[in-house]
Image (cartoon, rainbow, N blue to C red; front, side, top):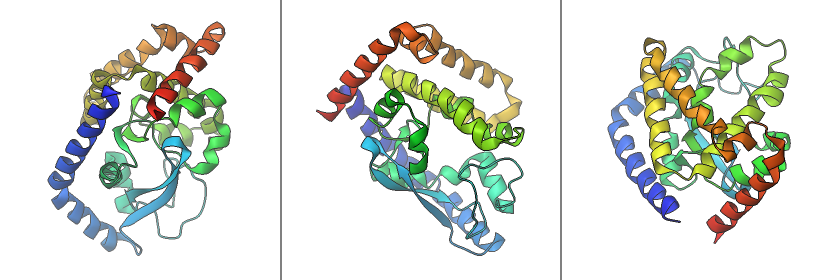
Length: 249
């Protein structure tokens, strides 16, 4: 209960501060997008939020207006504009989601929101636990899969790789993260995400720290379930259900 209260206060405070701080950058990016290609500055798309309720996520547009195709992107995707490549590489396209945070649709830290069609690829446990919380701008799974587009580009079947390999692993990380209900853990993820975005390949130790954090998923009873220990799956479901009920109340 206190965790959720403090987290929401933290979300609103930080989102308001960052929105004001980044306002000049937002205006510059908006102009560059309009100069680069025809179409709106912002991209809106229906995503699945808390309790599986739909909301419209807000991003800077990084693709040519009216582009059609897969819901996943890979390196070299021709739909992406010139400025869009820069925005995606630096993650600046995510800045408008601060508005989603202020409106209560998202959190700063939480599982990344998926499109509705992806829900059929979630197992019951993942679906119940992940959608019991607000989706976020970053989390442990996003941090460890920050180069997801590159991984998909190397696959002969990107869709199969995503839904059969990447998504299940990301969901295990998401469940572990949510069951922690740890503000300290959230701050660690926020700091590591910032370091990874700013320094990228210049600070290899960031990757080491990220993976050290992820190793916690195999050092606890919760982690052993999430990483595949079958005998404790029932305990995870029960604990997850109790967590969900507490949040609903």
